[in-house]
Image 1 (cartoon, rainbow, N blue to C red):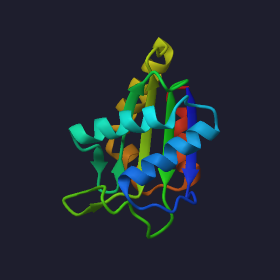
Image 2 (cartoon, rainbow, N blue to C red):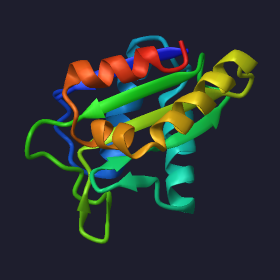
Image 3 (spheres, rainbow, N blue to C red):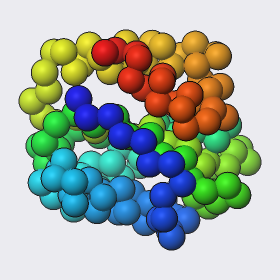
Image 4 (cartoon, one colour):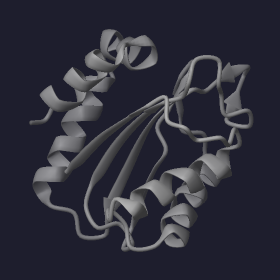
Length: 147
């Protein structure tokens, strides 16, 4: 499983679909996906089904696609004061994201690691660190859990 942190990236878009496009462009440049269009379509489809907001400023978009080369856990924290303006629910402003992208054929080890990660994330103190934590705290949570 590939774990990535993008801390205050230079994404200039503040709309959901544009942020998703920026993310898949980044992943294609890193050779982690085969197709921007297919992965963006999978993420946007999942977003159309139900909200992926899991805390006051945190969303967990996810998708499964044959266009994903390997399991990816990607944490993004936008720059201070930046939010995705149309990724809202009940006045929550989202500036942190945990993207989970799974290939059609995912190893059992990766599935178990994801399960362990999300069980750990469900603990209130861990969730709060993902909502407010510093980069080194997030890195420790991502790399210590499930490895």
